[in-house]
Length: 114
Image (cartoon, rainbow, N blue to C red; front, side):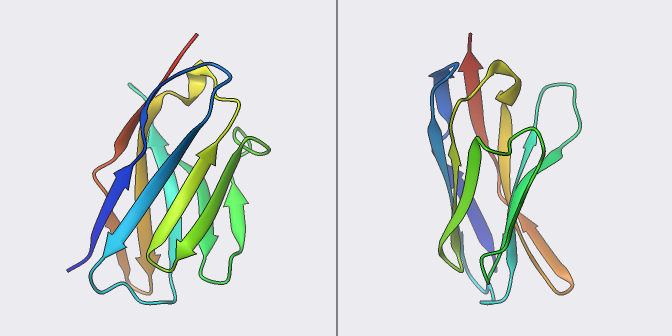
């Protein structure tokens, strides 16, 4: 059974930083893609960043240059968020995917105050 647990969310002032962690457990293969998504109130869930096992990354245009996704292992990823603004307020979700499978965490709330 696969489980993903996000942590590191909280309240921060605009311009501040947070680091989110996604810790996976269970039968996660070493070949996978892990990603961060977010969902703001009243909006659809959107992709923030992805990272493959080989370290290739992609970012949403809205976070390029401010957010960095990285891996501690094939089961743990981080999202370093700098220069946060109020538009970054959302629930942030971790997703792990590989051939034919995808799993989500429960999410961690990030609130950015002006």
